[in-house]
Image (cartoon, rainbow, N blue to C red; front, side, top):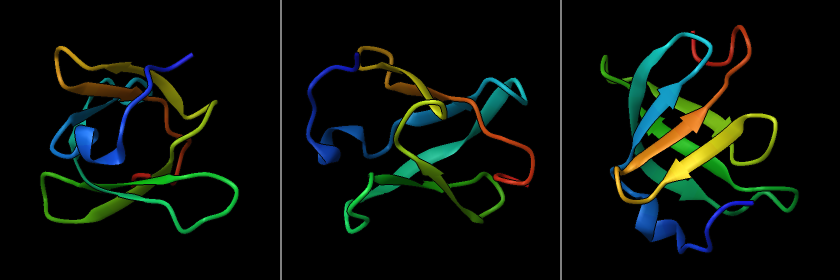
Length: 79
């Protein structure tokens, strides 16, 4: 389970993708308009926006102390 949090608590968190073994960007927004699940809007290092569903199997861990969200993308999701 993941810690209870407000979406705003995650803004600015680094996003580490376990599939590519690197930080892919920082949380820019948490989109809550999708009725099925929230989406993380991530600002990548090169200025692109990346969208990853805020659910399992993509979401692996949220480290509130370190300010890092660990995800595991699938091929084509972040490229």
